Image 1 (tube, rainbow over the protein chains, first blue to last red):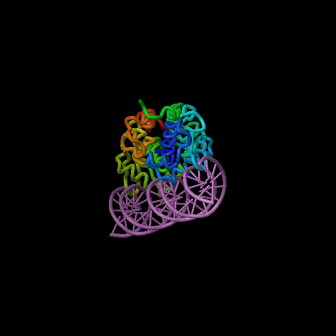
Image 2 (image 1 turned 180 degrees about the vertical axis):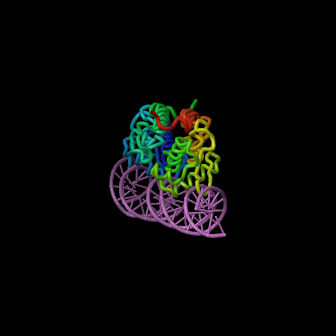
Image 3 (image 1 turned 60 degrees about the vertical axis):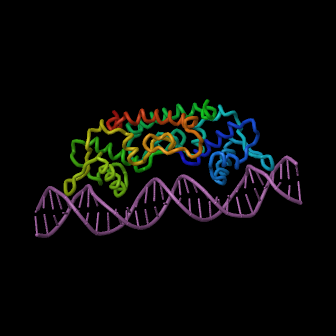
Length: 138
Length: 138
DNA sequence: AATTAAACCTATCTTTTTTATAGAGTTTAT
DNA sequence: ATAAACTCTATAAAAAAGATAGGTTTAATT
């Protein structure tokens, strides 16, 4: 499962994407709209900002906004940023690989093989679906 | 990521499946072979036994063994048993569903939609691949 | 019958991660 | 100057993961 942090990030990003025209959006507005603790959300938005996904404006009239169009922000990027690996096992992770400590030879491990397939199927979706694809339907 | 518990379970099950002919297998043998803490593994095997996946024999000459042929044990079952939900969000989980607390209408939520697709793609593999499919290749 | 090998059971402990909060600091519009 | 808003760092609380401990029960062997 995705952590609350990543779940909240998605909902916040959706809110920002659905209000592109309204200029910088307040943390407090997102928190209220999406039912998220304001202080927790603050940290999350800061992380997204430091990663270059969001921009911000301080002071009166300030807030957060997307740095790029929603269709350029892949879901996989958000997950990796806040939750780390997407793969089910360290030994099949593309970005956070670690050697398997329980099997003798990964090249011959059937578990490694199946989990690679799961990773590929998952990434095929998460790398290609973007923020634009998760905005409210209709 | 799968927990260590589930990872250990898979490696233990692989060992049991690869030694079907040898009668009951000792916890200590699996622990040594797969480099797993023996006491931790003990708890895991017990859980698998209580779920009906393994059988055991007590006393001298005892040990653990599979209750069914490897090809009848789907990987999804093991994961759900030890780790819980396979889906990335509670609101798209088939077996551990919980209502989304951050969006107003799941029927119209694009995130729900995409994560359902990820779940389907993952389950298509994990429900169909069995213990037999993860035995050592060659 | 005694011994020994093995799983069974339950509790506890430690560590790590997750989730959340606090509060002072900095920037900017008015 | 003031107030509104993000920034930063620290800490705390809760939950989960990972691991260990130690006695109990069962059964084969001697």
